[in-house]
Length: 133
Image 1 (tube, rainbow, N blue to C red):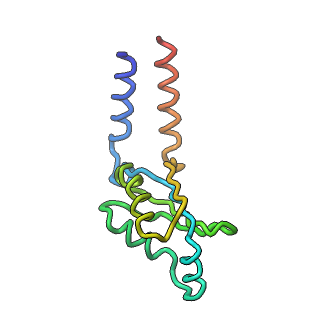
Image 2: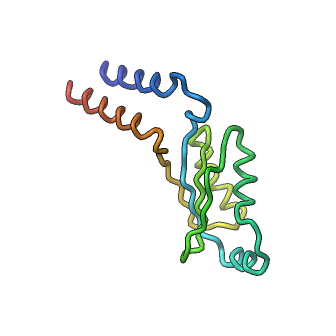
Image 3: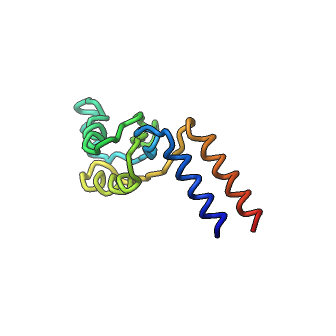
């Protein structure tokens, strides 16, 4: 147990030491399919499909819309977002569903390449702590 406490303490220090606000953001891929009537509206009246995502992300202090894509063949929107807390990612699912524009919404946490080495070091530390048991 002491090893795990030490591990999590060191992980928290590693994540917080010298970290900017952006370093503390959590990244998520949000994917949702357009409802047919929304797809028809976009075809009939071409417009910026990112408008809703931009407005939503702007309402979350410290959040950012990293990128936005349309998936060919499925009518799915894919947004990469960065939010200060994972609760926002969960809330986004229900907020987007409540608008009626998207269905089959998926949210997955993703790791930016800049944090990969740090995450792998944590995994390495966990292996070492587990081996000491």
